[in-house]
Length: 408
Image (cartoon, rainbow, N blue to C red; front, top):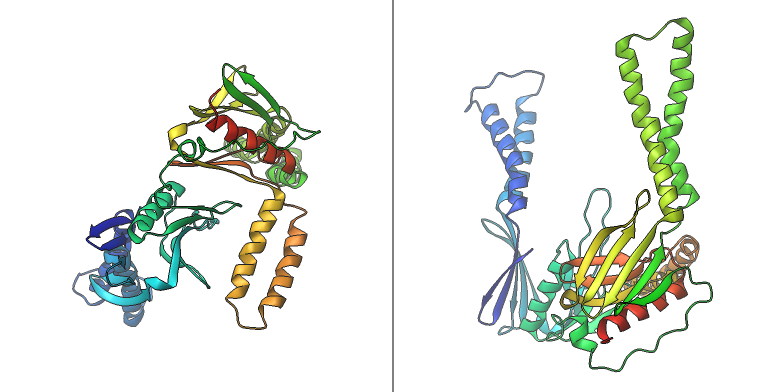
């Protein structure tokens, strides 16, 4: 998490160092070793055809990358006295500084940027202007860190917080940002429950003063089954096209038996077991959620033995909000994001860009499934009810919120 340093009317947010510095040490060491070897400061035996300029260039690149990780620091200063925001990047000494006016911003934002195969999820914390894009001041990798940082910045600047990490943005004052959901809404009138869906797949009951919801596991899509079975198809191909001709000519040696047995277990047996298990879980598995003013307990029914498996226990004092994600809300949130990006483009471009975005969203809408009920806590985010129908997700969301803030 970024480190915070307060000095009167100044709040410094410092990023860098720690694990990032440790990650850069091997690069720095390798670069210095190659540079010193190329300059004959360290006697090393040269092998291969690497020329002196190439070796120096290679060493410089690794040295600079390692130094940036080890000694690089990002410092954002929020100065309420001078009414400025200063973003500075340092490599032992300041290298680049950008200054912005605090008067141009009106709220502290928390966004969500999903990761991919190369990057992790992140929750950028920024300052929201009247128009245009946010000024990002830090990029925590967990919701808990982002919420804590946003609350500290909002208190320092006297701004509200706009939490836009899920489909329904929430605006909070700085004083309410660290209060639990129960502390914020227990004194308010209860929300009106939407009607229960006629085709609801979940089972709802009240037991021992707590609400218990038993939800089916999300169905397994045919394309997912095909993808999971691809290794098995490869294993079957090896069996038919590689082993069969060998069996016809001669027997296998012990080493060949071991090799092909390991290959078939890894490519055929284990993927098939995983596919069968996933199919059984999608047909027979259920998620059990127990909700009371004390908190939420999430469990999953075991497949091959009686009882349940514990997933999460969320104390009511740690629950900051309960939101939901349906197919409609996902498309609405994507549309808002596309529209916001369009307003930052040049005049005449947004209309065409928004029309294209709407077309893409319409096509993707056929494949989108709701993510269910989303519980935001001081320690992270927990979801349940993925894949249920939109009206059922909305109904369960209202039930969970009411059970959390209503004394039985």
